[in-house]
Image 1 (cartoon, rainbow, N blue to C red):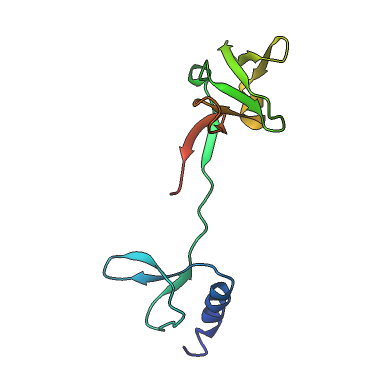
Image 2 (image 1 turned 180 degrees about the horizontal axis):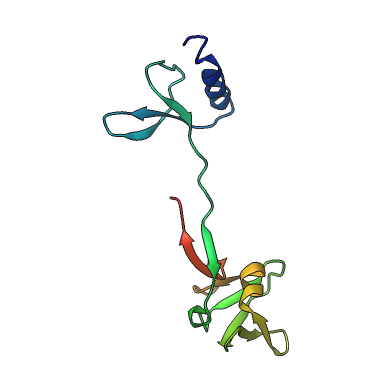
Length: 131
């Protein structure tokens, strides 16, 4: 370390103290690798491991609505059955009646399950995921 790169190393050391993952660049494999080593070598390039981006979804197209799946509003833990769809909305079971809502409303405010309520997913199609 020298006074020219000391600021960079201070940020890395602070991140290390905070429990963040530090990575070094392996020139042979052209990849970033995690390190648990607290000794930094000035001949390597280091960085704080980037946080993964959350998956991105888009609303369902009407033909993609999983008729027969369960849905529930995010603020109410009461599953309903998706009964059908028309040009711009879906129909689902309410407490005592059949209800209807827009694809945008269900995308923003509900989740669905295709495994009888074991797992709940957004009411949309995954368009990007960083894993």
